[in-house]
Length: 255
Image 1: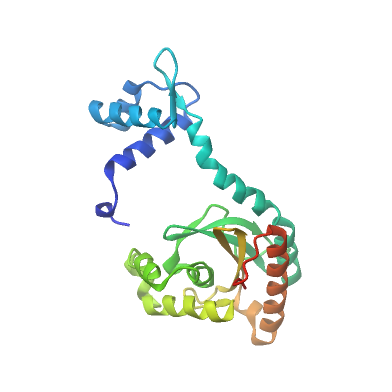
Image 2: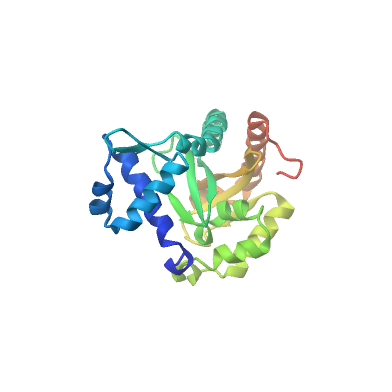
């Protein structure tokens, strides 16, 4: 996303929250001004606004700490984390049964975020660390699953923010077609489109009422040979059904 599409004052407010949250001690307004290079008047207004919403609290000496209002924002993530932990065992079982790396990914704006991974016993498994963020335009089968729940107009907006190098091996129409195909089939594949050596297959699980996540298995071309694909699809579908039951948020329109 270009800076012309963002609000500078909000960037500064986020920087203030991050700085204070990472500090072991209370932080003064003066320290914020100098450390973050925010003009005094702007810094003061940002701090007073955050205090008014209880995102910051001020001690008698004027020191600033994170307020209890910020805890309210974390409740949604707490729900996600609780539901996610229920899926750890079946994800490990999926990786072991298929001898493929398995991962759970969530959409964060224009990105796919890896929330959880399970590695197979194989020492040369393709890895993608937890916390990795990949633009949805280059997210392959994972992106097709995550984008499928959005209207086409929203998908096009997301794709318009992609870096140009994404389109060397595919077009925006290809990504849109993959999302539409997922809506019909409930499964997406990426057999070497973005990288010749990386093959993957993905389906959706409804982690919470508002948070679908992609369950993906990833491997090398030989792992997805034609004669193996039916078994992979069957095992992935079985795992997804189990996860949807565990999450207790299975959608009637889900996979």
